[in-house]
Length: 109
Image (cartoon, rainbow, N blue to C red):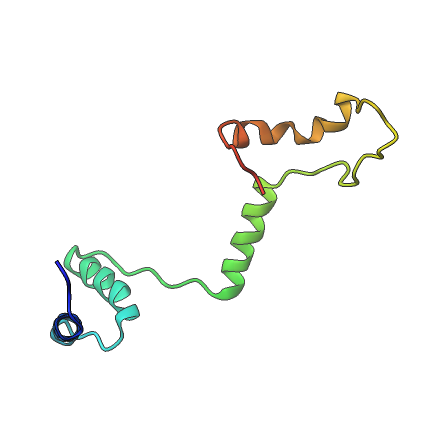
């Protein structure tokens, strides 16, 4: 089945009208504002209080705390020299934490 340009335009036009009507009838002037408005409406319907948004400093502190809790330290990031024939396994002890994360991965970049 071949779709003509005219039919494609009519379909896109119809979809844009439907979306605009949906947004207008729900009292949302910005589509990105729809989610918080819906959550707030649900919270009010459930007689629960709406939570206050975090400030950027609070979000940054939360992010720093999370990264400190989940970070791993590497003892060395320098490549091995080519002159060595065999690299001792003790050189890779700091990378052991990657085994569970990468055990089923085929490509890592």
